[in-house]
Length: 364
Image (cartoon, rainbow, N blue to C red):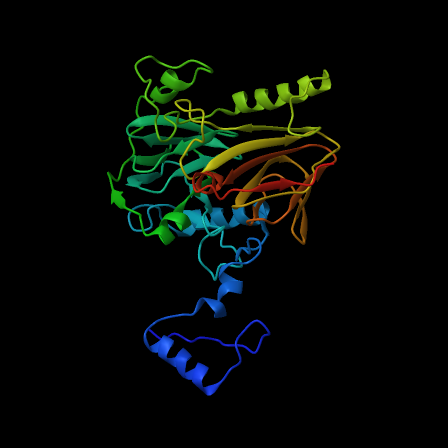
């Protein structure tokens, strides 16, 4: 390993003398780096993410996923036919942000994505289609448009398409965070995914899918949600009721015309998983949000509608299925003429636990 100390002639640096150069060469030989040459990069006044704001168009992603479905088998080896979003600022790594992974996964009729488990926390969000079952620790869970399906780390899971049509959805995981933390484990399970006699409602939904009600046999807090499916009809109704209450003169929305809900762990009321926060946002027609910024990064997917997104110096018009990234401490604002529904996931729980989270909104 070779270190190179870059000493400049900046006013805040000591004068470059032969004696100082010799000292720097000594530091390099002993694998030492003086803080005074690095502090501006290591301790900037505010977060400087290597990730860049970026937009991926659904109408470009989906045809390529369909083509992969024709050319690339799913099974052992690749495990999943998943195509990851690679942020242009992260050197070609398959990471949407330094801590978040996002990918489109595609499964043909009758196919199995074989069973495995890993320490990474994960979820699936369905922007269109149905027919795939995800089976978690032997519990089959139907996947349909608008459903959010969390998958906490180290649980066996596989997917099976029981329909006669292919299906695509979005995977979200904390792969980059665990990769850089060097904490990941992975284990293979059976090749086939059992979905025979799958009930309309999974065991987890029958136990936990009753708003405000908790079984007395499960009173201990769980580190991640035991509910494996958050159904669209509940999300849609909650958002609609917020906007209806606002129209009736009650304070029910984040800001005028902006309704939002957070998916939560029913055993704690906290986030669904220790490293991931997931939310759904709805903007009524004619709504514009104030610019806001957070420590930590986010990935959004447009569920429905159209609108305008501004992230830092970047701006786009977005529509159904499009995905975009908001890096740490980059200001973001939204606007829509006809209405906009957005699914969001972020790494905020990590920074809250470290007491490093900060948020700011430019609201009047």
